[in-house]
Image (cartoon, rainbow, N blue to C red; front, side, top):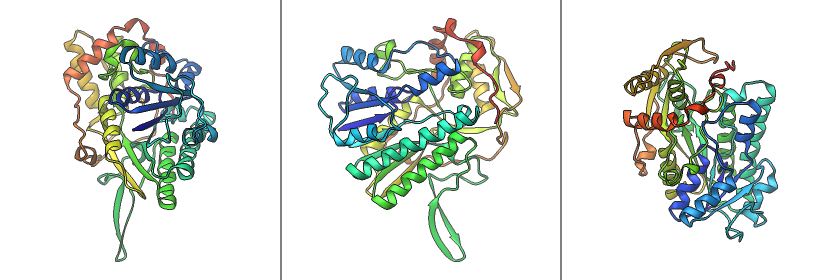
Length: 394
């Protein structure tokens, strides 16, 4: 099975590449190092140095004998995207540079992934809109023109829905109005420019499904936490990128880093903001099970990709409890909320679909957090307090 991973250098992209390679898939990854370059431009720290994508692919091959083809390229260029479908791809590194063939599955992570980044100023908003929508549009047209049977697994976000005062269904809602019934995409109300582009991504793919019979699975993912996967345990150099800053770090990852360097946990406002979360290992399961049971022709299949829900206060309490038990002096600080969002709200999403197709959830236990504390503490000297919070305002 030929798998193409767009955004293969990122927090989720690289672990996904190793995961599929380990299971015998023919894996190609492409990335333009956007996240690394953005981190350098904003001067936000990573927890530890990470080899380049080519270096990681070489390490993976040396240790496992398995191959991951690498392309360093910009997918906003339509010809770069189309090269993976029309046989003109130029590999940056590959043991065998023979064309892998039209991908049977494309996993689309190639987006600017940060809500704060998208609201730094109008230039960063423009970058977010241009990158995310053009890459998705280029992918849609490449599939239309060369392989309408290719299954596109697109990473959406639960942030598309916002926090409505009704239960959140898995992507779709049946409406009865004036005696008529129909099914529509669930109403969406994003809280950032980034999340707004993800709504537009979904709309683009829904257009491609309706017009050209594409097959798409849209995974509405919540915030991810974690560092290690089974494949990265082979060698520490295979660990994924890990950010702890306000821009690219996810909340639980940030809280654990803050605990280790005696930086009060930054809970925004009242702390009642509730979201759905999942372990990085479950992201890998979700994309794998989606690939194994693909969407049908002319289907936009949507799953809510979360395993449990927590408020910001819940997470702070859990981190504080584990941190204190490990000997850290963990304090919680409710600070003025730089975001425009509801700090207390109803939140009841449905998230059964992925479990129905075989995903076995990992839950946020004390043991999981203890392991994260152990890994992060090993890089304590690398942590810069000055990048943890800068107060990007909405």
